[in-house]
Length: 399
Ligand SMILES: *[C@@H]1O[C@H](CO)[C@@H](O)[C@H](O)[C@H]1NC(C)=O
Ligand SMILES: *[C@@H]1O[C@H](CO)[C@@H](O)[C@H](O)[C@H]1NC(C)=O
Ligand SMILES: *[C@@H]1O[C@H](CO)[C@@H](O)[C@H](O)[C@H]1NC(C)=O
Ligand SMILES: *[C@@H]1O[C@H](CO)[C@@H](O)[C@H](O)[C@H]1NC(C)=O
Ligand SMILES: *[C@@H]1O[C@H](CO)[C@@H](O)[C@H](O)[C@H]1NC(C)=O
Image 1 (spheres, rainbow, N blue to C red):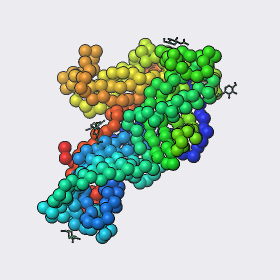
Image 2 (image 1 turned 90 degrees about the vertical axis):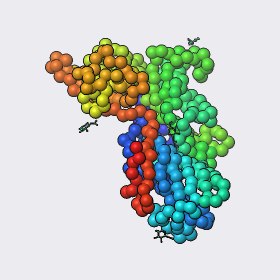
Image 3 (image 1 turned 60 degrees about the horizontal axis):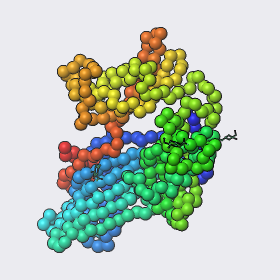
Image 4 (image 1 turned 45 degrees about the vertical axis):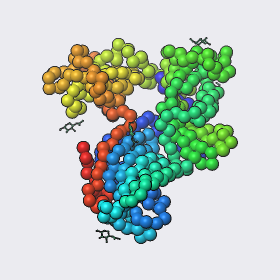
């Protein structure tokens, strides 16, 4: 049973919060990557008062993270161009300077695009430039007003999370207190103070509200308790007080129907244990479908089932989230995936969702499976050959 609690105290920042990560197919010709690097290099050139502009030489490394905002973290190399800063020309129209007299440089930058913006803005950038003669010059740039991805959960998020879980516990009718289980992602933006956006998982503890006013260290997660996911926006003012806060949580539960508009809804999707025997058939169809639609050399096998729901319609609809991992059985040597196919610890993994519609009495099964490579994407290096007149057209993949 899905329960939805939506609480908005402040809506200044919020438009819509996408649920879940979205990974996108990426290749070296990704126009967005070039736009991101272009923004970074223009930022660097704009920061110089005199001398020549720098021109992109190659992009050596990059990662792309997509939540509902896009972030690139890239390393790129530049060479001194033959047009001056004063000329005001875009770097794309400049040629490289004669190589003996040209300075070279390497920059690392984080560039982000919020999902409602069209342009990239440079969040951080560090460039090391080596002049033709002389020592390396380092310049650093940080945009305090930009949205920063938070890669590891920093301590400054603690007060936000404390506030958040308290807010959650005070504003729902669940019999027990919930605790934060895991932070999925977070962003912060410096304004006058800080804006945070954080998505985290919550879990039911063994402390009932009857006996406990607030969470204490003795409140421990209940193994079979309810869980949920929240996305909050918080503004912390310069005196480090949380001045505005909004929360959107979704609680997944089988037992409590307190928020639910349809009490005991028989036709609603219901969470089922991931090892439920009824799920066997659906899982087997899902992996068969995945292997049939996938061009990998080796079969994939289901490694972990994260979550499953079933819904009684005319038949049963299953929705399953799972991770599949490559096995050591190649499709060439084995006709089908069997129990004896071992997972390859170093193999690829895929994060998948499956919809399986089973009508047992009609012997009918319809399965759709969608998979994505998990985590952030590592980008292939790109080299610019010759004069990069048009950054959208000239990169070639070097792999
Ligand atoms: C990309 O991700 C890898 C693995 O996490 C990391 O080692 C590397 O430094 C990242 N590169 C950039 C440019 O951020
Ligand atoms: C830069 O080099 C190109 C090609 O060699 C040349 O056409 C152009 O005039 C040069 N620009 C400047 C400002 O020297
Ligand atoms: C909790 O229950 C009370 C009384 O039944 C109700 O007025 C209130 O709206 C409920 N709160 C939520 C968040 O559902
Ligand atoms: C919750 O569980 C922990 C560990 O199992 C236990 O020490 C604690 O007393 C329990 N609290 C309640 C209120 O049952
Ligand atoms: C598998 O290969 C076929 C033919 O080469 C292609 O049409 C199809 O899109 C590929 N599927 C995937 C998932 O890459």
